Amino acid sequence: MSITIDTLQRQWLTLRLIPRFPRKITGTELTKRLASAGFSVTKRTVERDLQSLSAIFPLIADARSKPYGWSWERGAAALDVPALSPPEAASFLMLRKFLERLTPSSVLDQLAPYFGMAEQCLDAQAGKSPLRDWLKKIAIVPANLELLPATVSEPILATVQEALLGNQQLKLRYRKRGERSDVEYIAHPLGLVQRGGVFYLVATLFDYDDTRLLVLHRVRQAEMLPEPARHQKGFDLARYVAAGNLGFGAEAPLDLVLRFTPEAGEHLWDTPLTTNQQITQLPDGRLEVTASVADTLQLRWWLLGFADGVEVVSPPALREELHHRLRSALALYEPGK
Image (cartoon, rainbow, N blue to C red; front, side, top):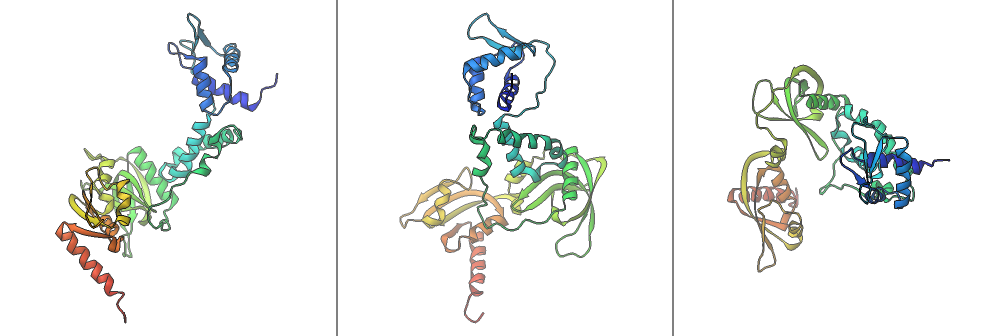
């Protein structure tokens, strides 16, 4: 009897879906799970598969009541079936497409066979699963003008990732912006963040406790040291980013009052600045927005990008700062300049 690739993939996935005793799964549930993975099969086909597979593998059916439930026998040796379901295959390829540079190279090397298997799995699903063309139907588009990414040495990126993964110290040769010579740092890595086209290493240096941001494309040489990195008690990368540190500012929040033209502020109905944002429509049609946000350079760049589409009402210091910057910008466009 010849077995097609489709049958083989279906049966491999069936083996992976069957739980170990005492848990069990019915033929009906297996049929639904296989259908969601892109295999168009009947319950009868699944039942025939189960009978065939149970003659080879230690599978048991609980026949005490209907519907029967299938399990791996208690104590059955672990079986790693080298197969991917279409949803898993699509997920692996999305990882490669969108997160490849944030994944340590040693991890990517181990995943390489799975990437190849994922491509083969989706190729075999031609005309059977909508997931085959999923990667052609999705994209990530930046909200602002996209700049060319800064060039980071792949060996340096790999070294930094491995040190972060293994909690090891780093010896870095680093050149600050505008400098002609390098400085040497002993860094204790805490996190790696990609912001636009730039990678930032979040770390403490030497024996100091204050957290620093190092721009990865300014690292000239990186060496992972055998000594373990010093742990910063209480540090949480998600909180660090949420506090606005990647916006180049202090953690102290600003209580903003902004007035947008309807066109400029429309997007804030769907994508608010913060969880405490409030929007009120004024009699003149403008939108008054109140929110507490981190005091950062990124906030200023964002507000200046609206030009006459937004008025900063409060705080007064920020209003005066932007007023001065807009007057300076206007002066650049005066006739004769």
